[in-house]
Length: 178
Image (cartoon, rainbow, N blue to C red; front, top):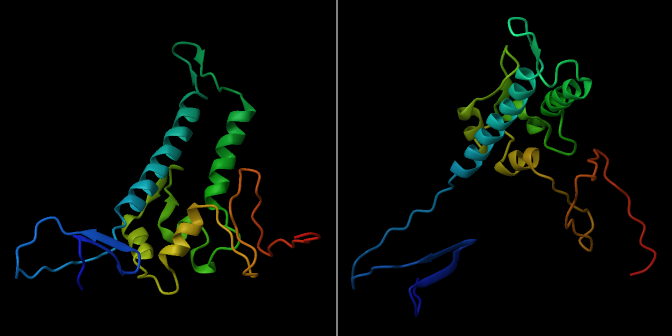
């Protein structure tokens, strides 16, 4: 491999690199490896944030008999429903995802006996590294992100919003004018 500059692009699909300090005749070894650190950290942050929200609502839904004070959410049905919805969302199957990785528990995010989310980091890393038979890093991504695909090469999934609803069967599109 050679280049008229110190920049190399797409020598390996999707990989670009710059040689910063080269000595004539010196052999250089380049190792390219997947780094799942950011993905694992994002899931850890998700678990922590989930637990923080649920704990905040729980802490503010209690009555303190000693002081006679009630939390701001004490008796608030909306707060209880938010926690219920959060928990059910975590347990739900993600429509359209690989059946082997279609819920958070399949990649190591589960509830403990106190109702807190816990992360089995090893299971998540195994899924991200393709070490779980039939599960790829792309499958893990589908659990955490909004994505779509088309069976027609002329139609592309561009974006979605909070109002976009997932479907196991897909959506039909009628084009009346192109």
